[in-house]
Length: 137
Image (cartoon, rainbow, N blue to C red):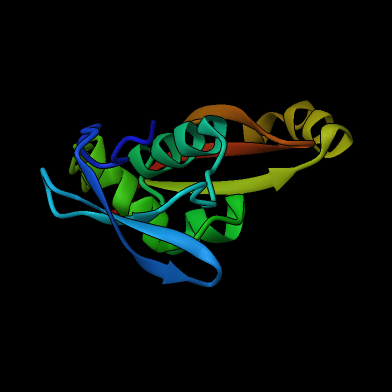
């Protein structure tokens, strides 16, 4: 038995054929759908990383370039999970994408680790270093 992907109701009626696939309409919520709906689903790992980067102060387009997911998807996840960015104008984040060897060289230089808070997060086979610096007056 099929169920509506929107409301999980079993009250369905056939509603034509599209691209050689049966189409159904839910009597409960009027949602139209096809059986064996093939859709893109992004791994929850990337959703979590995108939301973390958003909270760190990166823009939607920066997140898109780093993770490789549409900025519209990131906006939808922010809305879906009701994420609110903390507004702090005293600090601004900068970030670098480094591989394992570049990361060790980066941390071996004292000037890279002084005077700012920082976080390192994994992005597949690379690492992202996010650093918060005070605006200079």
